[in-house]
Length: 338
Image 1 (cartoon, rainbow, N blue to C red):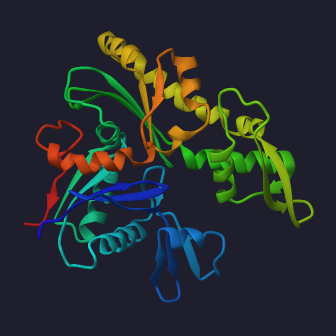
Image 2: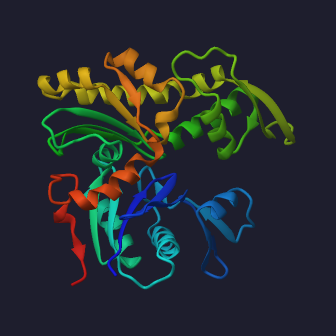
Image 3: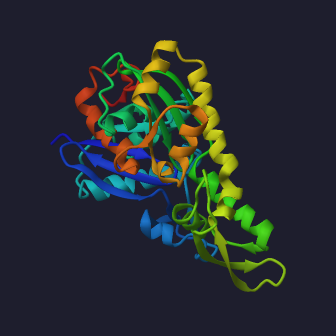
């Protein structure tokens, strides 16, 4: 039985699709490893719950950093575990399509491919994130008509203009969700002398952040350790706090959009003014981001339906389109067992 698996190997989440069945798994990209037993204890949600709560011999790690593999062994273990979960433990060697940021180097590509092969893949294809995001958002990329996508994940933000099945211009910047969480932690530490955890920072970003015009009316209580007293303490923060913390980060993404547009042929820029800019990825849900991009760039900006799943849905669709996709679906990068 041939099995086609699509993997959106994200810094924050891993989403797996099976051809014909759609999305079958969406879990945090976290592995918990027992150093004494030298064994994986948990992956995904179970491992995520362990972050900051384990004895020292168990480490809960994110094996991907800034959109690429930072820990090969842990990534292989994680992919293996997840593939075992989705194919019910059957020893079937699947074809796998993996997603990579558009600026990934050859060395990083090989690391991703080898991780998939060691996890039991028969053949591995790579597809670039902007292509997958547009396909998943239901955009017809085969026409000679420019579409701009800004895919903001946990580790990287990819900005690309796609036309006629290929990427015309793209930039990838290691500025995305995780860096924003870190900026919120830093800001709260400096302003209130309270150290909060990454989960709390992520919650604040998702619930109250606004990078365009914060009002100060959206508030939430965060708990952490007071740095001077060393004791637990809670403080109320507002969307003005998150604005101060992450506005610069959001502007860095806006800057990448401008740089891509500056180096794009004028006809395609005209297309983008009429088609708009599509936001995908978890970062698309950041409060005020579409308005900020529209305000600074001058082109309409809108969020894709269910932006977090766009890349995964695109990866799933890619199997049907492998003949027509040009530089996104790389036959050249086809490493396989014969």
